[in-house]
Image (cartoon, rainbow, N blue to C red; front, side, top):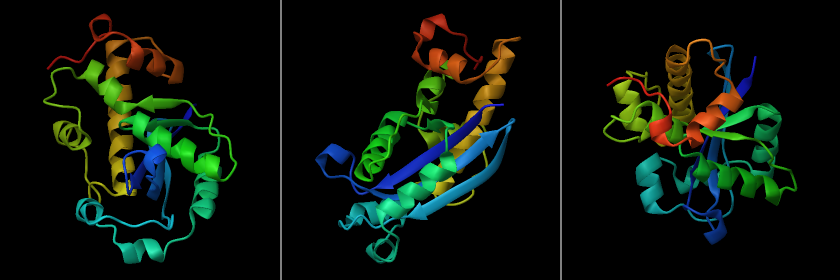
Length: 198
């Protein structure tokens, strides 16, 4: 059975190309239709923690200054994730930081990514929007922790991803809802895929 790692970064900026760095990262493993384990750490990239980031996430400069260095954290999470297929909510954001932070320690970042935002836009086109908090409320997904903390967001995304797999298996009876199927589904024109009824 495919092993998925649902990841989430909290950062001090939006773009690593413009100096943004990761402050926290988490991964939640989904396998055999259930959540099996998780991993989380703050990290100290040596930059500042803007006040709006603290307000949004609760991550303070003191928390970051006491955290391990990015090289240690990224090596740890890369080992934990292994060769899993990566999943993230708004994966283009997390992919950039995943690749940037691993490149800084000379480690390849060749993982395939699935995006729960792209899947949601096709599977639930009638949703008010496709923000994680909206979809969590829509599907009555348990909230364990604070939104905009890496482990809580990764866990909520993992529950959402499991729900999506179940709904796709219902819509496409007989299909194996595996990485190739999901990768095709998230890229197909919305009018050419099946969606859950509102």
